[in-house]
Length: 303
Length: 303
Image 1 (cartoon, rainbow over the protein chains, first blue to last red):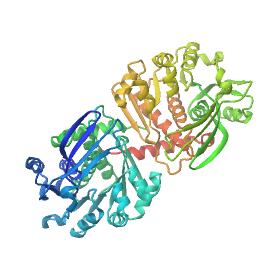
Image 2 (image 1 turned 45 degrees about the vertical axis):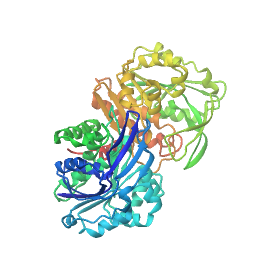
Image 3 (image 1 turned 30 degrees about the vertical axis):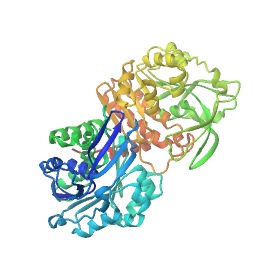
Image 4 (image 1 turned 120 degrees about the horizontal axis):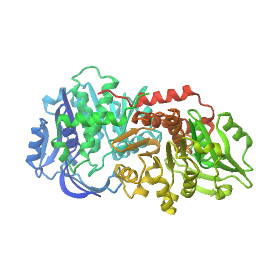
């Protein structure tokens, strides 16, 4: 079923201990869409400048991503420049140029408004609320955010969280927004605001997925070569939401959420094996199924 | 079957965000022995001073721990003083007083020399070699160490590692000794020195357990209340080795090692729920089995 994503598309310049790239394609919505495209019909809402390569938009379309919601605005595409040291969990930002993203005011194409699955990528929570106002209540709404919005727009963010079913944080984000260091308490506090589920991303340590009464811990795949962690969290979210959308509207069970977490983890583990979205452009369903099975082998034990 | 442990016994003074205790019982061999005592017949080799309370030794004996190898020397017991901040993964040492531990020269009681399972706790690698020279080759030797020995006794440590079947490190230790930041590469390098298995402790993120051709990732249990992480690694090692010793000498399979990892993780998760060894003194087999089952519920998913 259709999965609507709203988020950024960008040019990234990235340095890691394993190399350096200039002005490659990035952005949360780009990673999310590609990751989800292996599992669901993705509808993309974002904005790029006139400098954005037409062949990238063509590549997204070739993966059956609906780009009718992608606005090409006068001006330059959002740019991010950053680097990683050996601790790949921490991105160091050198420069951010919002460019056309500064005036992003998403208007959904009519056909998008009944999308049953919605992912509100990490953008201004006022825009996240705007999107929620433009859609019929989806079956499932997931929201991502970042420290900047937690600090600068706490009110609108709390409102948007209150209207979401699932919130995706990294460890520092959920600690900051909840004021609780302990992750179990932090998740319970956030669930008290409305969402039924909280997903906590822990980088190379994997994911913790909590609901009222359940906890699921998934490791990250221990890779020998991680080139570029940029987009790992968005790829995770894409695989996660893509899997849920692929369940075709059936009642979602705890096991569905767990398997969604593993699909997200599997696709994220591919994303970091190359710079930019390179590795996400030509996976096969068999690649993904094999990685999910490798996760099973990585975690299973018999009592 | 019998499990021989050599390591420190100590008085600890600990401050954490959750409280403060003065001169409580600690030491790697103490935590290890108590943890292992739920699964195997433990033989303890250590040294304490005349100031060490007889009732603690009585408590160990009441848990069927063989203390004939515990020397009571003239002088004071080893003392450690440290604190934790909210990041409970990092212990900050304020003071260490070796006292009677400075002259520790373990001599094994005759009956101990044929112990089939041996855990060389974190002590001077020259003493670890001494112990290895005093025993008939056990079925299984596991070794623990710390950054101090990696930096100050690299030669003897490499020799002791070369004679061990399993080495237990935390992340910073294996990175330092191998010169590899990536944990998969680091583990492969250490296995090249002799050991068939490497266990990497990652604190609140759990454990990574590698052999040639297998990887097993176990989360830590997401607890709401962690009072004192002191001894968590030693309690893990005790549960891990205790489970292997409980297999009664049968050929150990990958699944045995995985279940051993879960027993270690389960017992460690109890250890941190109270200061000192308090929680480890009165567990029941049912408590432990229940926690292992909670780990199954925490990690299972069906493809």
